[in-house]
Length: 229
Ligand code: SF4
Image (tube, rainbow, N blue to C red; front, side):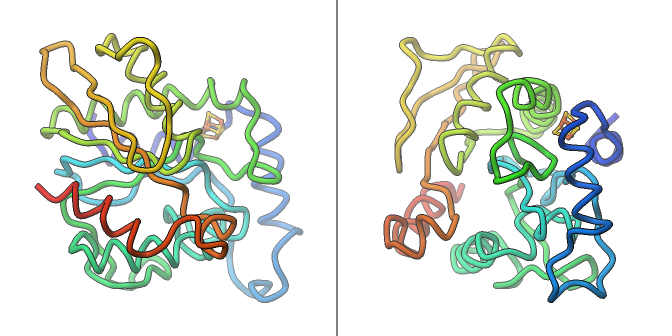
């Protein structure tokens, strides 16, 4: 059971009642006016990217009118607009924008997942929801490890913490004390076979960071370029 099987299983998960209600309510009745005539995905966001990726990008969670609408990670919201432009500038993405299935967008060498796969109200998943969704991240880590994973880029502290938790659950070596999240923070994880995997932090591409200049395109490009193998 490889990545397509995992994507299919994730996309029908109903393990978190609050998030199932929210994602489906937004899809049915809570659509943003400008998207009112569009069909909404209304399900968990499956991973998107290169099936042979050796870099995994871990975000926070889908946006209610972004991934929850388009069905593709970081697609259809301001955070995604910043990320895709940077992925294109640094040679990971075929196109500078990501719109929807069939737009020709493709990633090389990187696959995008999220700590929580369903859109949470106010972008805030509960600790229980984060813990429940961790099983999917563990499986994604295992599958990417099998294709030569050498670096994990975490956008934001929640993605960072989720990755450390999933790595611990898989029996990977995680430094103690727990490495602290920060922009361009780095730590080394060890797979059970003893292989080193770089853990790299990056401020999240949310408008809160990009509109205020806390995260600039230059900072984002520098982190992404450090992941080119
Ligand atoms: Fe399933 Fe994760 Fe969505 Fe919870 S957040 S319903 S575990 S996919």
